[in-house]
Image 1 (tube, rainbow, N blue to C red):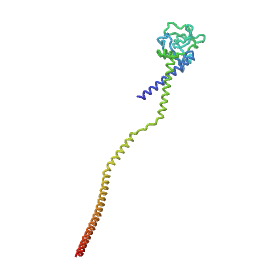
Image 2: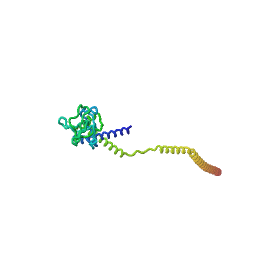
Image 3: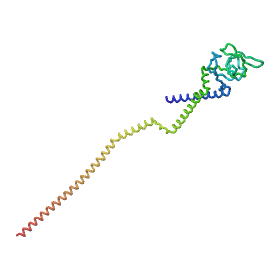
Image 4: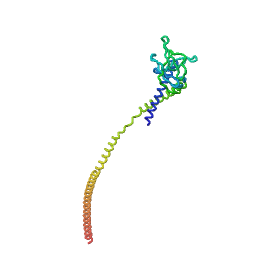
Length: 273
């Protein structure tokens, strides 16, 4: 979901940027071409009156194209041209109702679809700005007129472009920060499972070998006990022999004392007599 929102935000930002650039180009090109905006040979025009209603009406945006070959112009084409209305030079878009040839000079008689009579002046080729491509955008002309004002240009063009560049700057900084972070260690689940199985089998093997180790330890302990018992028995025999020798020595000493006492008694009896 987060990735989808990020993609949507990127697409929207680029759409806003492209739109802003197109409007900027049209604004600057119109200022250099007597108020006629050029964009790759096409000219967006805002309809100023209802003289061509119902073909298009006031506030619509129509797209005209520059004419490369005037011989291709024919009756019933809708052209945009310069004309004079109440002493002012203005753009007008009407339908050609007749093509005139005045002494080798081609001119066009025009009429608004919603007007009851033809236009008073005929149009020379030099006054023709372009031919309608039959593309119209209802009510967009008013929007374009607003965008051509300083307020509209600032609100709808400058601010969105500033937001776009700030957004791209944020993404650039975030990318740098992300690149400096240590890469996370990839966890291989299969490797973890394999190691766990190996450790389990090793533990089972050690558990199976435990009785043999206990038996071996018991045998060693028993041998040590037997050796200690034999050593104790040997020491006991030695002590018994020493005790017997002491008893025999004591008996001999007592016998000697008895003999000495008997001799002393005999001697004393002889002296008394």
